[in-house]
Length: 346
Ligand code: ADE
Ligand code: ZN
Image (cartoon, rainbow, N blue to C red; front, top):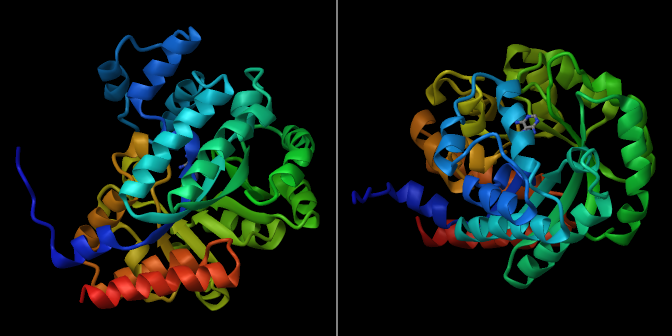
């Protein structure tokens, strides 16, 4: 076994308290758990071994990933499946010193297989309530699948209405994910207006594969509080200035962008350029079971590839707390913890 010595900055980053703001819980499903749940539920998979499934994780773009990601999620049927999946993520997050996480889930992936949204949320919530006892706070964000129609999203929103009340402490927002190209944010203006009227937080994937115009639409039409990915904003200087001035954060996922060929090399990632321009970038894992790393691996790979310095890493971690959907008092307490750690390990 080889042991790698970490640089002092890498070690300090690993140990630092962090927030994660962009994680699809279905994307935390490791191949081993997919096979265990398939067996438990009598679901037939298209791959006959864990190794064969893992070998299929050679993606060429977002769609090539999504096809496998939805197939993986097909093993989730019962409340305890959602509990087990979430608990496995909780363990990984705690191991990476994540102290606050804001988790996406895709109800339409499950309702179309006959699993009620209430079952999905109950299983996730049970794990997150336990995580809270172990020092990990969390919020939950319901995402609409953008390759489906807005009417489908509206029906999903209506079906989830009682849950927004029942789980008001946890289920605090809506998001937009899945196939980006050809499905601009403007397609979902009405459902986001309804969510806004209900006082929910709003986020949307934009500018991952899609053009900067999709980021403008997310800001101007959906009125999002944060943009997920947003890395293609760099192509439009006026947009970069606007993001920097308004402090609308980008939840960036470097290893995801590498695996889905948004950048052909991590050294070409736009995160540092955006940071230099004053944009509130954060680092997150997206779908860690598929992209080769949880949050610490994303930080460490990015520090190395982009040669980030101490102040830059501090700013990125702090941005994660600043951009989170917690109360000002909770946010300040998390930043105090970060500051104490950062000062103590100079
Ligand atoms: N669903 C899960 N991961 C996603 C990603 N990176 N982009 C869009 N939709 C997703
Ligand atoms: Zn994502």
